[in-house]
Length: 121
Image 1 (cartoon, rainbow, N blue to C red):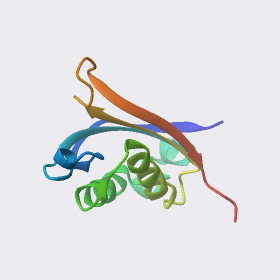
Image 2 (image 1 turned 60 degrees about the vertical axis):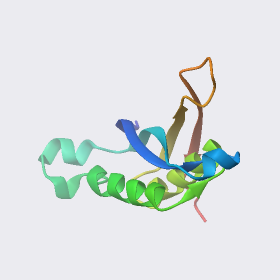
Image 3 (image 1 turned 30 degrees about the vertical axis):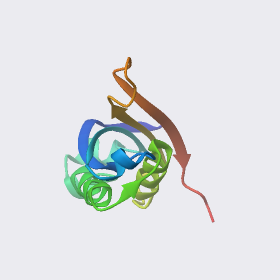
């Protein structure tokens, strides 16, 4: 059994894109994270100390990282965020959906969804 913690619609601003005009001003990005964890102990005890991950702490780390870095590709943004999530021992797997609203003229958003698993080595 694998439980999931979802963080949806995390709206951030960062430098992202490959064109010169995209490299000067921050643009909106939207992240949706699914953290694969085991929440059974926290569910039984109702104690934050038993939670597999403090998602407030995780989210703050993601925000700080995205705000402080520049990306050419949405794929790179998603990969970096996945790596941050997997640094938390309680997270065995993560799915990251990263969207760049308004990237294409006739589309609401362009995005990528990746899934990464904690390596054993």
